[in-house]
Image: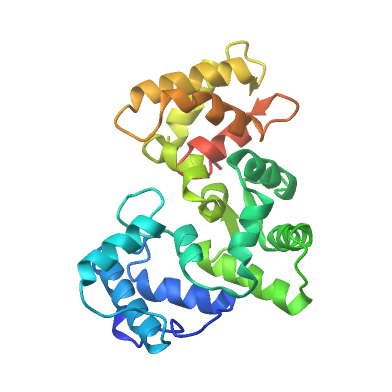
Length: 271
């Protein structure tokens, strides 16, 4: 188990992106994308030890109260666990490329526009070379100086974070985990993900005129029905306008083709 090893790097005043990744993998010991439960207790305990060792932590009493205050400060969506984007707010990462990402794409709509630009082959994935170009532009827009070695490090770090099957490419929902929690609209669709058969049926149904794409009005009807069918999930009917606008950022001149909608609504890419 990873959490039996010595916790890495928490004592450092500044972390490189690769050290940040090591910390994430150390405490997310089951690899489910969250630091939660016992993992969260271990993380908080070790973080407090490191801070006291550096002379910046308070007394060790009232640990439960301190942890409660800590979660109120950093658990932005109040789900009782720490996500990657929340950890980036906690740890002092060198030239924090995760926060740099947020400056470049601070909303879901901007993220989708960036995705459309860099998924150049419309494969539904950003591959290593496309990711490198994306990060290069990101750093330029944030006025961050970097060299080829640092760009390579950032690219490899993000791939290691999200490329769980080691195929050298990232899906839309994986990249979206870099967004602030409140902006990650894809989280709202987690419980409504469709398989290939369901998606093909629903696309055919809502493509009323059979022209091979869904326009904004057709997408609006689709999302309303999807929200109604998934009331127990996080989808909020009052936010459907925002969801629609964000998804339409993937469209081609207002035409949302099958492939673009698929990467939002499907559990996995349809071959």
